[in-house]
Amino acid sequence: MAAAKRAWVTDRETPQKPAKKLKRKQYEKELAKLHVELVKLQEWVKHKGLKVCVVFEGRDTAGKGGTIKAITERVSPRVFRVVALPTPTDREKTQMYSQRYITHFPAAGEVVLFDRSWYNRAGVERVLGFCTEEQAKQFLDVAPEFEKLMVESGIILIKYWLEVSQEEQTRRLESRIDDGRKIWKLSPLDLKSYTRWYDYSRARDDMFAATDTPWAPWFVAISDDKKRARLNIITHLLSQIPYEKVPRDKVKLPDRQKANGYREPDYPLKYIPETH
Image (cartoon, rainbow, N blue to C red; front, side, top):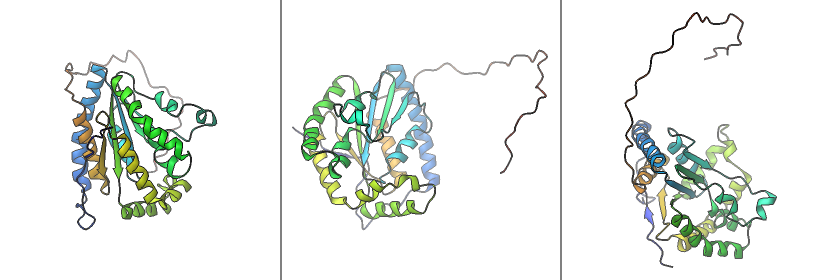
């Protein structure tokens, strides 16, 4: 199989000269502009009945969830659906491997964002022994043709890999240990995965070699600067789906109806205390 040339969503910076981290004010200004474009894309997807599937994979702590949140912050959840599947049930374990993912594929007018995907088999399942080596290799053999069928059915498939350095991953994991807002992000599985950096690197390399195809290439983003990575990924995503502004009638609020004698009821209501 002739693999496509992997594209880098962000420039690869050397560890000795990291890019200067983006300031929050600049980030929010740029993100606001991109949100406007994402809404335009949303309306175009609905207008044309497009089916878009975006896969987010990457190292632990690389920022998949934060990127997805940045994408979906200002768009409709009825168009942009996020799929983050839990551990398979006993019943699902007996199904064809891809079966539980297929049910979440987009219909016309939808954008589905997978926060981890069928590529679990090529990564965490393979590294931590949740599948056999034979099952992992079988998946890598089948995945390109599986994705070719997706594309031929009319699905626009876009795959992102978020890469983070060892040093930054360590910093992010340590920051979760004593932070009550982040502790839910730290699981025993994360700690086990942390010790297997190079096993994950080998699994990632095998995955790229087998599934980086002309019809479904991988796009790689360096995410040591999470804000910069989010902006770059959203900009890249917008570039992958040609869209136009859908014409809309000019909106003007109509007059409200008259009260016609209506008065607010005088029964007591339980108001929330003003504590701030």
